[in-house]
Structures are given as structure tokens and as C-alpha cells.
Length: 224
Image (cartoon, rainbow, N blue to C red; front, side):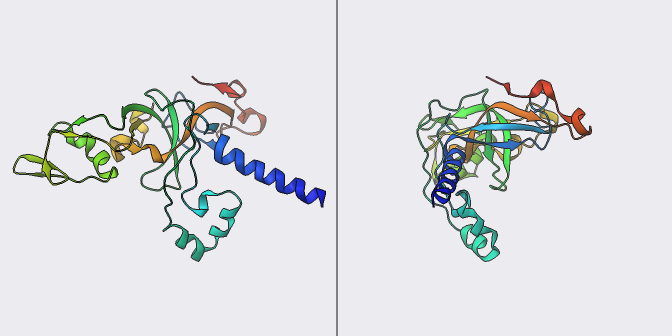
């Protein structure tokens, strides 16, 4: 009986760590070169911005094994519980490297650098020059924007400013010539952010074999 209790406690502790403290992930592309290399194993710090509460069953470790069953997975994809997250010890800011859910496929994680912040409650000037930049933000914030007769209509009214209800972030890869980022999909909401990248756990070069594939200099490499 004691062994069973220990196993349950260990599993619950692992779930807690993954949901609140952090988890590892792999860099699959060179979009962040030379800062991050393909094959880097990163640690996602979820405490920095506050760990997110699950939005569906698939987000809960252990319980998400039931979503491997196709009918249950399809049913679970319709769930979207209210967005909440624990308090963090800092706010995302320009220059931070963050891990977030892709707008095209939330199951896919992307790693980019914050290039611009549109903070909650701070008015954004909207005109013909800035509309292409902020259109995605307005739509993802639940607003509507149209152009008619040379005028811009926001939520059915003419206006030159929009006040975000949530904070939004413009993400860019350091390797700008080979990066699918906000230049393609626009601003992402704070809801999509998983956590902050702090350091490389270890790194594997897939072009090499055996022990030569391990990039020793990158083991436990920290970043500001």
C-alpha cells in the first residue's frame, strides 16, 4: 500500500511541476539561430509569467491519455474553459524569448522573441498605415474592423484608436529570413503564452553521430 501511495504522490508531483513550474521542449527548426539551434532541449519556465490553468482535458497530464481515443479527443477539442493563470513574478517584455501555442495549430509550440507589446488598456492608433499591423490583434480580441469609403470602422463605429481588452505580443524569430512568426500570423494574445525560455538543458546535433552529436558547450547554457 505504501508503495502505491508513493507512486501516486510522485505522479501528482510530476503533474504539478509540468503545469505550474515548467517542462522541457525541443527546438525543431533554425528560426531562432544563432541564439537557439535546431536540436536544443529547452526548459520552459512557467513560473515567470504564471502557470496557465488547463483549457481542456488534453492539457491535464495523466488525464489527457483519455484524449488519445479519437471520439474523446474530438469531443475535447470543443472545450475551451475560461482562461486563467497563476500570478507570475514578471510580465512579458520586449526581448524575452517565449514559448507559445501556434495560432494555426494550438497543439504546436513555437519559440520566438517578443518584438513588440500591445498592453491591455493602452490605446492603439488605427489608420491606413497601422491597420495591417493591428488587424489580427483586434480580431483576436473579439473586435470587428472594416474599411468602407476610405474610412475605418471599429466595432461598427468610425474611430482612430482601439483599446485592447487583453495584452498582445508581436513575435519574431532571430533568423528573420527563415522564421514563421507574427509577420505572417500577427499578434498573439497573452492566453497563448506557455512560458519563458531561460536555459538550454542540453543540445543534440542531428548531423553528427554518437557522442560527437552532443553539443557540450550548450549544456545548461543560461540566457537573460
